[in-house]
Amino acid sequence: VDLNSLQAELDAYMTEYSFGFRKSGTSVASNPVERIAISLARDAVKKALAAKGKSGKDFTAEQINELAVAAVGRNPAFTAQAEAIHAAKKAAAAEILGDIAA
Image 1 (spheres, one colour):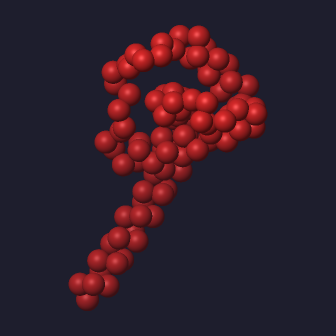
Image 2 (cartoon, rainbow, N blue to C red):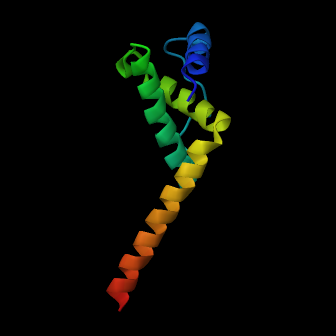
């Protein structure tokens, strides 16, 4: 994650943000791979903020989520990692179910 571009995006977002106003379409993804990718990006956003001396507590969950969704859109590595995690979970579940059925 490029911290400078993330900071610029955060600064731009903050200038447009209206307190108490909710935007539609910021709900959590229903696709499990997308949900995992957003979670990974959310962690990266929080780490990037911390590296800039900012606290995740200074931002709403919606703000962090919007930054994470944007990061997933810009960086395909989040989706690639999410696909690997999802595949590993599916394989583990299949193995467990196979052991139970045997």
